[in-house]
Image 1: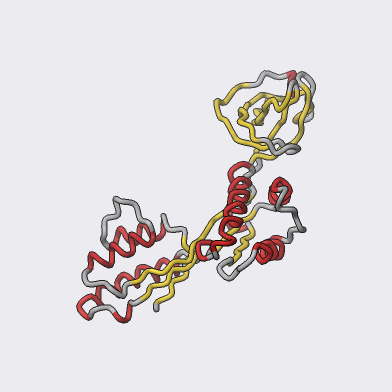
Image 2: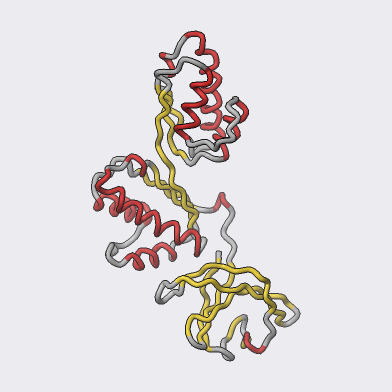
Length: 258
């Protein structure tokens, strides 16, 4: 996480309790994306190292305007088990107002003006490091799906640039096995519904690997399992077992057998 610490004019800016321009900056060849904290303009700036008092320090700096530099210092995020989790289920939202109210309630945000998205951007970047889950946005009515996409873009931006938010969009999906006739059909329906990559091996080991690594789902409904043909029931139960194992070992999954 790169945090803005200050801006200063070329040749005169105190950083690490010294005038950082009095020291030689070593270019690490690393670039980071940041936002100007005043105008929220995106910049690509360089990461440098310098030796101050026999200690090597790292910082990022870039010229935001003529002779004016912005300085950033990297702060480590807390370990995963010390980060707060915020889960918001949007599948029952039917208006933009309901979306805003849910966000404000869960994240303890003040009201903001949607016509000024930079305001929400500023509020989010001031949050303590956390993980935020948007659940069921794929099931929202069309009249508010566009608004939700705008919000997702803002949350993505904060996560990508500031790093204080780890942001996840978690779908709610239904895999319908009602018309399955062959084992191949089972794999194909799973693959098509969950958008597996083309290299999916269509076997139980490959199913497990992709479920726990690739699938951004919060809730998966397995429909038609109990009505499947008798000669496929044994295999189907193995498939259900893999989904249920993923539910136990990866608690962002919820598997519902219908």
